Image (cartoon, rainbow, N blue to C red; front, side, top):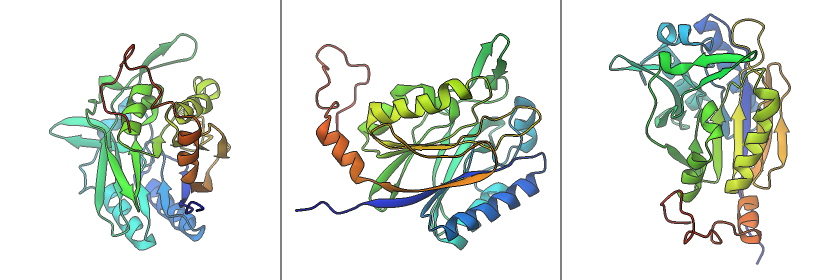
Length: 281
């Protein structure tokens, strides 16, 4: 008997981000509505979509969740457009600590998941970029998934993309889609952004969605090139560097096919190596 098609129409919003929070939120709201007109059921925003990205900005733009203006906009936009909305990331404050946090809202406008960036972006590339998120931010310690009509979706944020163990933990929980709001820069973006997404997709036989802000001209400059990769490691949607909406139908039967045809999870030699002690699904 022929398998039933399982599809989710998704949209990645590569929005422009400036210094004015209200303008950033209004721009995101308009783009969410545009994505809905394209038929999107699942819409995702970029990392730090409501503020400039940088350690000097995190405390200035930080909000509580779910009571701040950014949460209010996301909740209303999800409800008004009847979509699942991955609210990119924005700086969160709780108990005098700051986090880089991703929220998810359902079509009723309810907060259904929250993920705090687990691996903080502390790097030093001479002649390239030096950045230390841990100067201001605290790290999250919990995975976060949500369900969209039977499809389990997991999340990471930017630098988390480099850590295959996190993606594997999600796969072992039954995830079929991984979403990473991610502001890679002009040093690491050209070399690693596409490559890492394809690697996580192939390693774990999942769809990988990564959403960047549009490229700016001042401060921390994002690479852009938001991307959708299928479980075979093929790029099936990709933006350029400017403001853009990437709209693609995800055929979840591709997860079933690749897992049946290349059954790497059941073939793992856990008698020799077991880097993650979680049951295989």
